[in-house]
Length: 359
Image (cartoon, rainbow, N blue to C red):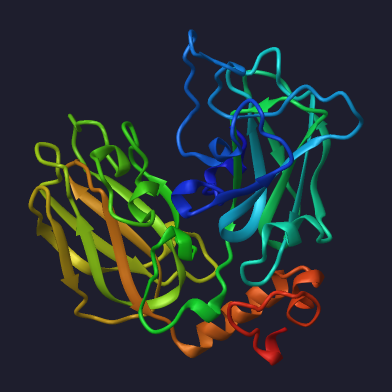
């Protein structure tokens, strides 16, 4: 798998992404494009329009042009690559695809999006049926919407937009979850993700089943399982939550949380300190722990002893003004020129005004 797939899917419905519009969806609805999980296939499923597919499918085009769907990213960010998954589309997949992006302020109407100036992320490229098609993206800009075009028509099961969250710092007010995926927290490494990835721990909302958390295999040898994360911003942790909800016979016996303030060197060489020292945890319980020693941190490590599953992990903290200024600088530098002009030129009220000295 390409390296860009290690980044979260910014378009996922799990992160509140939405397929806002499509020019055609006669055979299968656009809303399936960003559903989490793989597409499924029922061999004998037929409706009055023909074969039922889990994905987005347009009619056979008899005129010039191409079909398209616009996706609002659940969290804006820098896109490193996209996946066009044509699972089960064998005789009706698009032979070519292309991808464009735009960045806008606030929540513009769907009709306005179609009229904006779009930037190409993936030039028209060949696409194969019944497989994941991977396309790397070189842009370093921050995008809010992505448009998938299929040439000339056909069906796509899933559309993934992998990238790095670039949060608008105007919304990082008071205490924030420094670990949250939607704020820019990111899983870096783990000892084991046999049943489910520890990336799930930092997803929005509470889990509804163990399958929406992290569960490793049963450990039969020495040692313990662990996961390391990069925080959304350098901040001082003040409160952490360790949630074992729904894990009853397979929760950890105890956990430990450590933090590190990593400079320019590798994470492995950094000094770590206890945020929560090794402590027993209960099954099927959301635990809250106050942090005794407040120190700025950029990374967090979770150890579970000896193994076992969690559903969510939160790390609430505060960001100082120096770090906030750096976040503003990165945010401003990543905006496309059209976004910088948006509050003055577009007929949509911004959600919050861009600071004059940062535009």
